[in-house]
Image 1 (cartoon, rainbow, N blue to C red):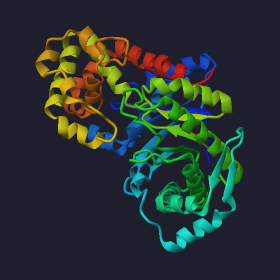
Image 2: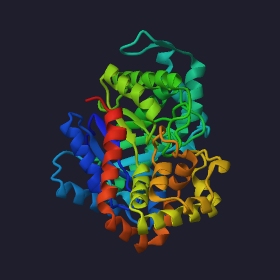
Image 3: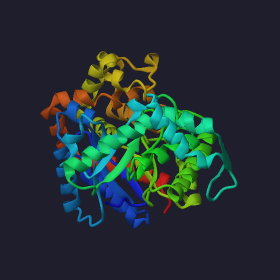
Length: 416
């Protein structure tokens, strides 16, 4: 089984043009004493929209690694795969994000639930957490409730894991289990029993992505009570340490934060918690690379700005189509979206400032940003017009991508 570094980062790239700029940010972080394992991730949905293949992601990652002489580990993630999409990713991927959100809440068979309650009855009472005076009270109903919600999801994860092993012929890959794309957050206590279930299914899970309290909308800041998040995040870290001590789980098991792009208000508590517990983290920041491309195009004026404006106009007219698949991770107020006519009157600076996530800038518009975040389909439809522009304005775009990952994410999240 492969090992994932203490700190790792999902650096997806919708159009496969920014792998070198992304890796350059990781290299500069290493020079600052922050060792991060890069993980290039791209989901089945994104491949379908862009009309790309997982092999394209592997080729771009390998090319960047070779050109920049990267000698450390790196991975290619089959992001948010299910049982029906595993086979498409097997050859190109060595990291699998197993998404079981759709199985959460499906009642397990009674015999399975009864066994789960019996197997975990030893934890009834007070559950002590390492490195803390905090104790969690557990009764039989706590265990039964967790089993009713998550046991079917754990068994589904096992089915997918076993299929990957069968198709690859080995288990030499990273396993992540994702439960974040659901309506209700998992409590730290539920996380403990989820990990118990995954261990019982013999899944060597190395990162787990729960749903946290608050809103993790695409490409914008965290929405919620930061103090509640901080408490929950720290308890989750303690729960993972307890689970490693208690269950047959990999020693490098760590927490994963999905839709982690631009969650600036919670980066400080995350960083402090990582220091406090001396533990690892995996964070996914995929979508903002595409937005940095748009910012670079708009800043270039001329043809680049024209392309950016055309993408927004089309996105505005196809709002329902583009936003529908992302309705659980965006909050757009239509009255704050600028009209097509207004945007067409903007210069490159105005467009870029409206899109760039700088909350101190009066031009920044989170609604404008979220709509464009989910509108990469339109750029894909442009074909060579868009891809040629990425090459034409490559220098400025690469600078934006590198700076975004290093300055706005790595330095703010990971301890040095």
